[in-house]
Length: 251
Ligand code: GLN
Image (tube, rainbow, N blue to C red; front, side, top):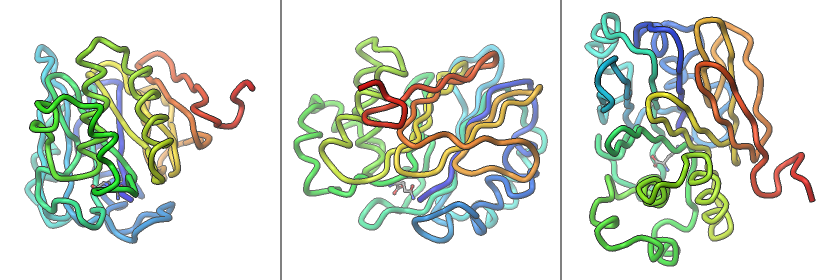
């Protein structure tokens, strides 16, 4: 399982968010501590971030391990943002290996990451793919289970559905169709929508901003998110809502 991280808060550097925190995303690429599936996250990485005055996020993705790209750490030192989504990848067997399959995926102002698998990939996912018009299938960003999951969510966003409703509906529909793990991160540069569904997720609310991540770094008070929860976070608040038959769901 990959590891991913979203941040919304005061302006800071990519390096301060991704590289510097002890036990943070950078280190999680070779030494994750909460990872139950897979061992290292060396099949590429990606960072997407927003700069003031431009709603379309920049992306930097590579097919190599994050530690094998020293130029990233250097550029990250002087690149500033208020909202970021980043991931280090442990590729699911049978999916594309290149940069195009490294999260975050992007469409317009949106950034998306999936930590998990759709176990029925590829042969058993035809009924889900049938939810999509052919042009959406032609625009799949990569030959990857996560790209299909993203396409299903993107279709609902394009139809005007709010992010939380779109993510909840797709995750519940996909979970009804295939076994797997469906932890996602989605942002439009203002709000972060996330799910805990089959893998770990943690939230840190600090004076400088909110972090949502697969696992905590060593530098702050993170709290675990219960499994099967939808998280909505912005600069002001973090909200939890049970998903599917998650704990706390009213009967
Ligand atoms: N299935 C996704 C991929 O192959 C995510 C994998 C993961 O979370 N390890 O990239």
